[in-house]
Each structure stands twice: as C-alpha cells, then as structure tokens.
Length: 446
Image (cartoon, rainbow, N blue to C red; front, side):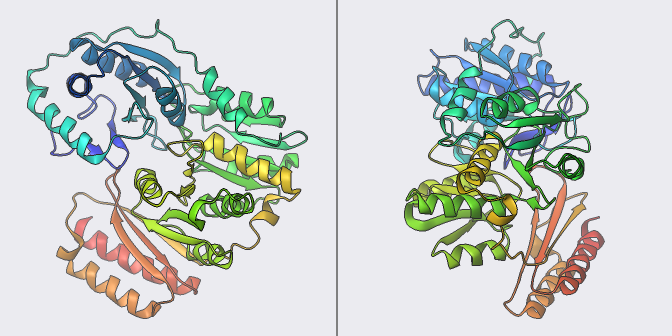
C-alpha cells in the first residue's frame, strides 16, 4: 500500500483494489470509529450515503462492518448527494457522515469522503491521524462479510425540504432540462426542481450502476446543450456523479460554468447586502475574466489551491459568503458547508426569474480570457523543480506572457494526472505554450 490514502477529496481508487479493498475499508471503519471514541462521539451513529456506482453497497457494508467492530452504529441513507450527506450529518444526531463516491470519475472508480458532525470535511490533520492508524492496523484486520445496513434507512426528504426553503422566488414558468449524470441526483433533482415550480425534462436519469458520468453530466454537457436548444428550454443544469457541482447551459447554448455562476451570485448577494466583506474566494483555476468582472463591482477575489475543501477553509478565515471553483463547485456559506450542485442550480435560476433576465444577460459582463487546459497521464510524480525541461518551458511561457496571463502546472489530487493551465490574451499563444509544457511533461514523466 502507498504512503498516502487521503487526497484532496477523500480516498479514491479502483473499487476492489487497494485502497478500496475490503481489508483497507474495514480498517478505515475501525480507525474512524476509534477517532470518534476519542472525541466521546461513539454514542451517536454514522450516516452513510452513496452515489449510483455498482460498488457502492459493498463498500457501505464494509465500512459499517468496520465501524461495528468498535461498536459504532451505522445508518444508511441510500443514494443521496454528497452535500445531502453533509447537510443531514450536521442537522441530525450523527457523529460523522460518509459519502461513497468518486464524483466525476468513471463507474469502476469509487471513493470515500468523511464529514465531521459539523458537516465540514475532516481537516487534513485529522485525516492524517486516521490514515496513520489505518497503516498500523490494516495487516491485522481480517475482512469479514459486509454488514447489511440497507435495512436501516434514513429519510433524505428533509434535505430536499431544506433546499426548497432557501428560495425566496419560485421557478414557476421556467422550462429547464436536467442532466442528472446517471448519478446521485437522478431521482432527487427532478423532484426538487418540479416542486420549486419549474417545468422539468430530465435526461441521463436512469442509472444502472455502470453508466454514471458516461458521456453525460457536468463534464460532458454536449447532450444537455442539444436538448436545451432542441426543446427551446430556458436553461439546462448538469450535475456530476455525486452532485456537489453543477454546470448550467443558457437558452442559447452558452456554458455557464463556476466562474460565471460566482459572478451572477456575487452580484445578487452584493445587491442584497449578503456579500460579507465584498470578497469571493476561488481557486488558481478561475479565469482572469472573473477577477476583472468582480473588480468592476468593487469585489475582491482571493485564490486558493484547487479543491473546494481549501476554498471553504479560506472562506471561513475571511468570513466570506461565496466561493467556488470554475469546475462548478459553488459554496453558498449561508446555507451549506460544501459545494452543492442542486442548491447552486436553484439559486442561479432563482436570480434569473427574480431579475427577469436570461442566463446570457446575467453573465454578459464576464469576458473570458483564452485558457487552455491539458491533462497528461503520468506514471510517477516528481517535484516540478526536479524536471529541468518542464521548468524551462514554464519560465519561457511566463516571460512570453509578460504579466498579462498565467501559467499553472500541478498534479491532480485524485487521479494520476499532471494538469497544465495557460491563460492569456491571445488564444494562439495560449494553445502553443500549453502544448509545449505538456510535451515537456510527457518527455519527463510519460
């Protein structure tokens, strides 16, 4: 087993293989249970939810079996979104919450995200302590038949009622298309948006355990765009596998990503005097165009490393009301402790109805700088400073941009990928430099 289990968004890997084999999952249950006992939280159950991957029930059972070894009870929420688990954990009588999902990854991957009883993801230090205990005990853990927790259902209706309660203006008359990504939102989102008053057409809402994120959802919006245009819908909303993010499509087919949604939300919150400190927190991936558009409104933008966990930590430090990522994680801190795709869709569409403007009109002042993203699959990772060819290309790119753009090279926290982002005023220049840096990485690590 490697030296690290927790990445930027929990534990993730191929289901059935380390670290998602039965032995390690049971050891996680034991280690988490012991962590809860140290905090005198062992008298309350752990809530377990999952997305629609076929491996989810087995992992849930293995976790429950591990927790039971240290006499921690589990309750099963069934198929629910990641933010749904966070909300139900913090508002219910639970010691912790666990979401079984690999988010936007294909079905054969899965993952485990742990929430504290406050609804926040565990801090890095606590994850590290649990991880170290797993390493100490895993070889001594004998996998046992997974506990049957499907009989202990926990009603998630309270989560939908909460989301509806955040609306001040209903969506009556709005015609929308929902791409549920064959994931956690497949049953919940159509019900929610219909109850909010919208006329809903749902697509990719028939999960079979293996079609989650398959050519659909927040990372593959082509089908949603086609449906919006063909049906004349006012908007489309696409969710990823666990529905902690959303991407919107306007009636004209324009993609309304996390940057555009943060601009729309920030302007509305500012007008309502709910934008504490006139600050928005985003990541290093957000476009310069967002920073400039917010600046014209007198709103500053703070950047963090990639990961909604780090966005939230900075939001708490700055007492910020709004934060998020270009990828569609948007955090409304007045309501949620994590990114929530269904909440985001509700609030952005509510703004459209309330202001009587289309999504195109709401996002019109976001002038996006050309940006090129390249993902390179790598066999191993080395610190960038140990890759002279890569360092040389990055420095040359920064010199060519001359302060008018940005270059970012990083390793993914959840996949064996190196990610290159180049942004600047000239699309040809951006494309060229992104490929040059990617070629250097392939030469060094491919």
